[in-house]
Structure formats: structure tokens, C-alpha cells
Length: 242
Image (cartoon, rainbow, N blue to C red; front, top):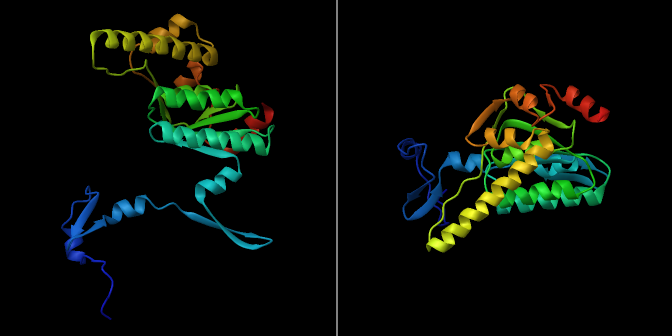
């Protein structure tokens, strides 16, 4: 059958000639996404049976029903807004039941991360944190900001802490003010780590002076997490006992 729409398709031979790193391709004047990119952007759906019939959820919405929130990828304003909204929603739904925060993040914007941090401290439900993959920079701060005795990491997780960094341009007086502000920010972040790790300020300042990488066990010894677990049963037992 001859197609009558305006969509153009590539043959398998044409696709084979395209590097896998390409984000998109053009064919006969029409933009087409690379199949790898299309696959990576798909969010799995789950279907549940309810009294009113079947209901479909994307996988993250379904996990939100179980009070599980994901912090994945760089921390920035858009993601922080979504995380804060989910925290506030779960508080309104049940102000006493714990919330689980799964973290796999390289860090990101300090102010975005502090928005999540302040919301975690503001709401009534206890927030447990679990690092899977990595929790670096602002990700490590959010990891250690979980409820005491409810901060976990999987055995192969990696944690990294360091001082804030940034770049500025403009008039000398403006650059000086930006420098003063980032120094204030550094002190404030150090104070947050002091509060949640139990370490003294001098130790935190010295450790964060450069990129400091830790294994899950080293992060436990430092005070960023409380336990290293490889099974759900162990985590659930620890949360119940907390």
C-alpha cells in the first residue's frame, strides 16, 4: 500500500550508516529521531485493575503511590520543583508515613538542591534516603539530609563531596560581590554537613576542600549514611525500627 502522509522513512541500510551517537537525522527534508534516542525517552507504563476497570500509570507515577521519589541526573530548577511538589503532595496525603528518596545524581545547582533540602526539613513525614549509583556534590548533601537512621546506600554506590564552584564575569566590583556570596554559600553548606554527619566544622571544611570520593562503607564511617544494604528486606527492617 502506498503511504499518503508526509512522513518519510529510512531503509535499514540507511539507518546502519548513521553513527549511534547521533541525536537525530534528516531524510528527504523531514527530521527523524534516532531509534536509540526514541527508546531512551520511553517511560514504561504499568496497568492495574481497579473497581472501575483498568488504569494505566507511567512507572514513576505508580512508584509515587508507594511514596517513592527519584532524584536522577543533574539537580536543576525544573527537577527540584517536581521533587518539592511530590514531597508536599505526599505530606498532604499522609503527614506521618515515611517517604523514600532514591538518589542517583552527579549534583548540580546549589540553590535548586537547597530548595529540595529545605522542603525535606519542612515537611512532617520522615524522609529516608537511598543512594543507588552515585550521590555527588549536591546529591551527597541530599543523601545525608535524610532522617537519622534512615539514610542508606547500596554496596556499589559512590559518594563524592566538595566545595561549591562557579564562574563570574563583569565589573570588578560585581565579581568581588559574587566571590563573597559563594564564600557565604560554602560556609552554609559546610554547616549543613556538620549538622547531619556529626563531624566538626574543621573536618568538614578540610574534607570538602577538594573532590573527595568515598565508597558506601567510607560514607557510612564519615556519617553521610547510616547503613549499607543490598536487600530490600534489610532496609525495610531498619526503617520499621527507626
